[in-house]
Figure 1 (cartoon, rainbow, N blue to C red):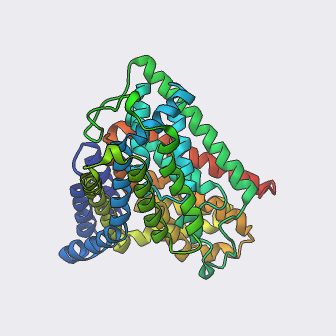
Figure 2 (cartoon, rainbow, N blue to C red; figure 1 turned 135 degrees about the vertical axis):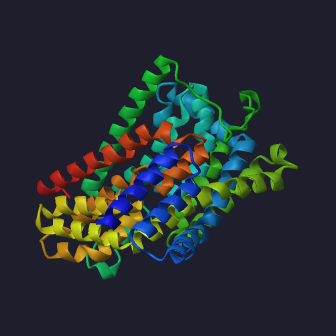
Figure 3 (cartoon, helix red, strand yellow; figure 1 turned 45 degrees about the vertical axis):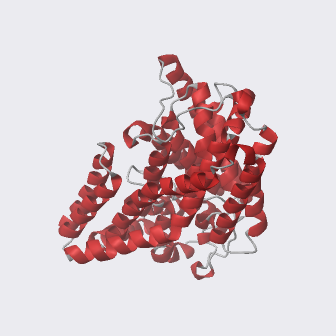
Length: 438
């Protein structure tokens, strides 16, 4: 019981310390130490071994994606291409729809195959000037990027994410593919998009009336590029379209990681080619600045993943797994599975990790209950995006770092967009399953 209490205290400490403004990396070390002590784990091996190994695995897997994603975003910003796209969106959407426009652009990029960890570096240079022109607070941005690139994207059938692909693996015996439950998924995805857009439109309009607007932070360009010096929209949009198109073309030709890296490099090359006069003499500096700016975000996120690594070896974690397993026979299988995956995703702070643990340890219990495999696949892929975005979520920490906002100021929007709305989407998915609409 002490271990269980310690695990809950550790998660609370990570959340509170991050809210108080303590560096998330340091907060994750403190939280990991609490887990180790209260669960009688060997202290230094837990920190130098389990914590460090989980962090190393994450940083090793993602540092190049983070770096190239940030460099791509820096080229878009310095060349003026991002500002040009933002100016066009502003003219099309106006002040009241700026936040919704950012949601749509992010969703398009996510459906093109750019992961949530990378997409923020690509979308921020576009969204920041768009929000600046509309005088809308940047505190919406973490929620917008998280909602569009994770929960909304995962709802749509055929989305090219690792989370959507997980349950298609043969060892899980579900027999589904990435396009599982196409009708249900499309309905739920559109519902989430409408709900998210309505929320953003209402709260952004309310804040504008209260005089709460855009605040420049260290992650912004100090000087805005004037409209008269911006590159044409037609050429500015080409790198963005290139990333999306190449992700679709290359996804069947090479691994997902190589697809992302190749697409980003190609888009950067085109940006330089199309804006050579502006970037002349600044190409190397722009690349280095962008790549280097990703390092703090990479390690902040890696630290939270290190904490998750210690949590998963703690004896108390097994208590929560057993509790989640006990739900199998307590409720309707779809309802109990939603609760179970959220318990695990909430503790670990990751949708993919939560779904993977669920699939490995609990999915066999559900296969014998007569579930509809396609419906179950789509519901679980959406459900794991509920409690995964509690304030200790590594992706949320990354979004705040890149967008230059604090967890305290931005989380209320994240909670609505990535916890409440996905729960509504999941509930509708279960109702559609009962109605035979899959």
